[in-house]
Length: 376
Ligand code: BMA
Figure 1 (tube, protein in one colour):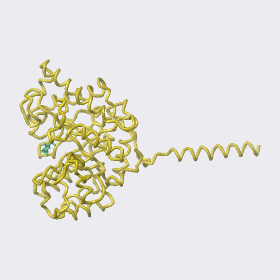
Figure 2 (cartoon, helix red, strand yellow):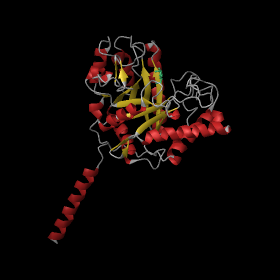
Figure 3 (tube, helix red, strand yellow):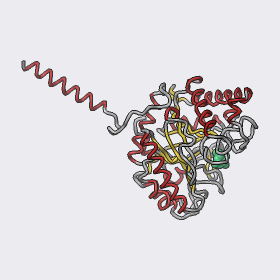
Figure 4 (cartoon, rainbow, N blue to C red):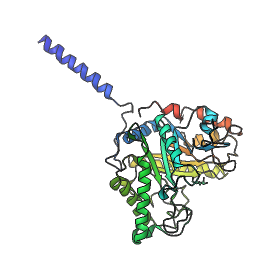
């Protein structure tokens, strides 16, 4: 009898130890999401979980083309010693690395901003290896005119009604899938936050309002997901839907492709040298995105932002931070540091460099070192 008790007790203790050691690092509030791809890879599911955990602690800081080039340097230059403009200031890299695969559809060797795809692939692998998160946007060309993303001549309907354009678009997705499939580390696909056809409520892209109506947009999005997921068996993507800042008559959901086609909601909002307007949009739009995303058990993010050349003193600590600190976003992405007339993260000599450092020291702003040891 005594032995039986001891055995039962020991088994119980074993069970408890086993149960607690299996308990995920993430808090118990983590509700298993329904993802767009039910064949999504284990690492992609983990990325989703990691983002959930991050959003409870603060938000991951991202920079577009962070490691490709910056002010006064380019990674292609053999003499280059700079890791990223973020690193130059805060001695840490961003947690989120943004890339754009414009021109991959044409099998071009480099993207619209002259980043060679081979270099991009290496940067993606390194970022992932170091525990960073990858997000990819796609400034796709216009399949009807062969103009770029800003060629607004109507084209989306042609993808469904014109056989030549349809075939061409499908081939483009084949090229895109082929690139995504090369993003591998230790034999496993690198998870990617894929953010195609962004800012569709703006007038500047061929997939945007009024150049493409909501019905066509949704058809295009769904077709793209189906081609990647079902035909090309790409299973390492989380799909991110990100309209631009909402103008008074805009409806965030007007172009929404549906819960089964979107994993994460986002929004792009820029400060066009009007802090009051920017703050108003940030507060109002992020609250709305939060409300919608939460009701759908989806994550949400501030998918693009910045103030070009950052002329406003203490912009990061006084304009941006107080208005996002309790927003619940998973990440925020500053746009690219292209050259001295187009950059969104301060360079070393910039008057806001110190302010960015202070911003980076706040507990909620998570850079690479803050997230790299979270289970990957
Ligand atoms: C825009 C600008 C362009 C760039 C494009 C794609 O916002 O930065 O110069 O070509 O993004 O990265």
